[in-house]
Image (tube, rainbow, N blue to C red; front, side):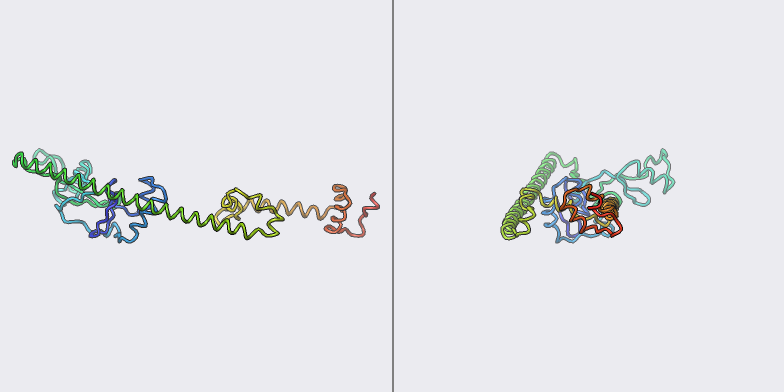
Length: 290
């Protein structure tokens, strides 16, 4: 699927027929490949040297086509040799740039050529390549047989390369999954060890081990995080809740002690409230109220 051409510093995706700039993004968006497979392929090709699209040199004109690049039936302007892959675009180019108009003596102002390009979108730069399977019709049946044989041979080569790529990807993915299983097993052993050795008196008192047993600790830890720097709305909510609690506590502090004791008539509660919220001597004592 992926083919690196060191002479030009490009990595070609044979499925889409053009060179890739960001391998991980390409595999995720266009191939919908999962993270483990993407990671394995990115690791495989991390050592190659990719040249910036605007600095990749173009092949010589009329060179042999690259087998994994898409081939276009394009057009070449007769005046400036500008290359385009669309008839309407080349017509518009000749009209606007060269002020060319259709005439009986010249119905077209371009010639048909075979094109390829390493990149698409804004980095598209076409170059002329030889026409594929260009066999002279005068060669007779033998040349046609030779052409069919060459096509079959090229098809077999492509099929073999595709199989080797698939086997390589399968091997990389298998190795990655085995490593992942080993790491998960090591983490489970470590978690069991920690649980055995960290059951302190404090944890026994809080009852957290029993409360959080068989629960996803990662999710619980995530929900307990304080708001991040960019989470302005969550910060505002937390501040409002803190202000609400502060107002409630401050309200309790300014209430007369007798009202607090009426709300909590138990004797031990009243004694605790006297300690937490002492009243001045000018206020009515609890015994006078009763």
